Image (cartoon, rainbow over all chains, first blue to last red; front, side, top):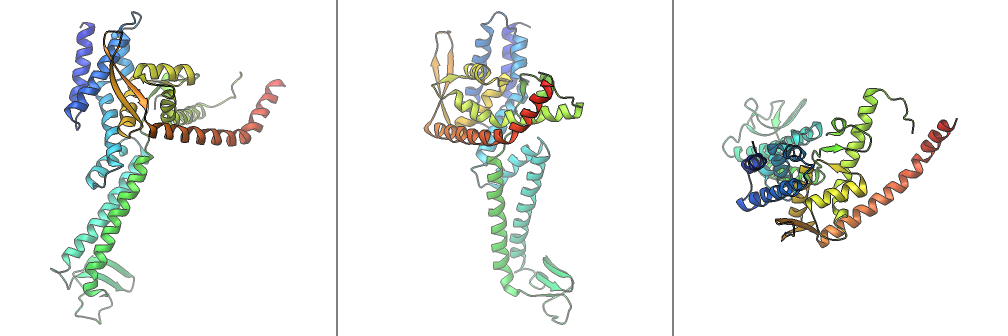
Length: 207
Length: 131
């Protein structure tokens, strides 16, 4: 395989892996990497294999671009889908990311559950509510107890106030989770492969 | 300089710590490399290597620059170069200059305060080596 075809093959793989961005963004990135290869190739001491090894596998390079843009967009977005996608990507990089993903999942799950219960109340008024009793304090759909039986040890205490309370708690959960994840994403520093340092071997310094 | 006797897990932990520390400084280093004017990707890598001994995988710098551009810290421009092909130059925006200044200040203050703390450690090492 010639030098040019190796470079073209690398650029084609990079282009194919740069998904989720506009055509202009993708071509700008590919052109920059193409110019990097050309610049480095002007040194007769440097082989195309060495240049491409320095850049890393095309799909990994593309992933660094995608992660960077995803995290940047998500950290300023209020879309739970975008924020969950960003935290899921973060989760693949280690324990810290996994914990943030779990926090996001729990936060949004709780928010959606409260809103769902508020929607359910008009349809199942006797079974949906804040149930209080011995060892019991829960916002649930409860098939056993009913409001019509006040003597029951577990009974519902909010009545129709359950709807606004759930709407407020659901909204607060969603907004709080969004703000927290945005904050954490802005502090996110993703994997940066250092190849060498002064004393350590390249393999030991690779993150 | 003679290195202290460390076990392999200790060496690995120390290396990870160093890598994390360098990683944390990377954004500041990239912004600082652009302080005196515009540079293209390969020039930034050479400046980092020459002035700070931060040697990165070459492919790493471009996604970082792309993110900094998306955040409005740098702006880029394709320029026809004497080399016969265009180069994408990056320069700091005002926000980038402000962030670089803030980071440099924080780094200096932190480094100075930590230096006081680690001074006895270094002095003890020197005394051990003298004996």
